[in-house]
Length: 384
Image 1 (cartoon, rainbow, N blue to C red):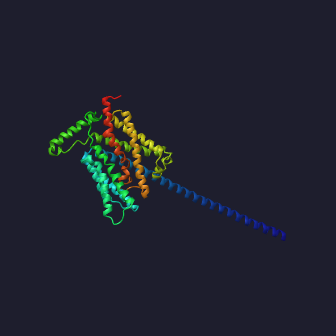
Image 2: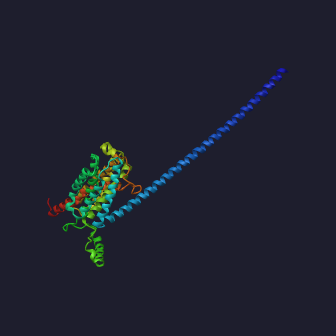
Image 3: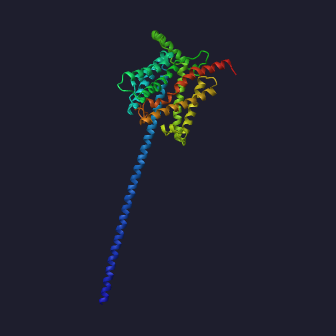
């Protein structure tokens, strides 16, 4: 009997232990399910947040892209009106841009602890533009004259000996931002040779210009004698040259983003260090776009041997535009600045927009002043 009671007590104890284990398993299972549910909810929330962030980023990119396209179209229309505004207004606005560009440049220079004769440089650059307009035969003397004046100032007006960087940056400002781009003013003064044919657009534009000229002479007879036609052979040349340079930048940007695999620095290390994102494919794409627009321009301007002169002109513009772009990048890289300024929102300063147009100016003047007229003379004489 005692043995029976002991066995009954053991059975009861085992039943109690089994029930506790069952309860623990159920509790653990419910806890695990709860944790899994919370984890899933957290993961879903995180995924939703990431999705919203990505969507918001894409929307911002589309808005920025739309703003860039609108800005580019607006600037294109403004620049076109500027090119055909006449020599006085063209030179005046160009001089103002030069002053702003020089202020950006010297602010960058002073950031690294160099203090040049910036006032002399700014005045000298403005004098180069004005001289190019009113006395183009004296244009070349402006740079050495103001360089001499700057050295006299360094020697007589400072209490300590000026450093090589101070002298060099002063000369660079006058040369890089004054003398070189002032050749665009000289190009605008070039009139068409009577022996050369008009552009293909002349039959459509001439009646409008004649009506405007007649109205101006009848309404403002005194002032009309001081106003010349804003459309010259030089201004037409500037228009097609600038639009070719602009689309060179556009083509380089889009072709580089889509097909760019080989860095420019793999061939030219210094150029790659100045602008690490430049690619060979981007440069070739920009050259292709530039050559296409330059060729169209040569056909409309009826250049001799347009099938050669147009593409060669485009290739040279793309190359010199790249030189100007890399030169500006090199200056910014050395000073530790991303942009020259913030005058144009999301586009930097004046120098960030016109760097590709600087070194193309003297070359373009040579083409418009000498090369094309020489080719016309050869074509008229029919020299084999």
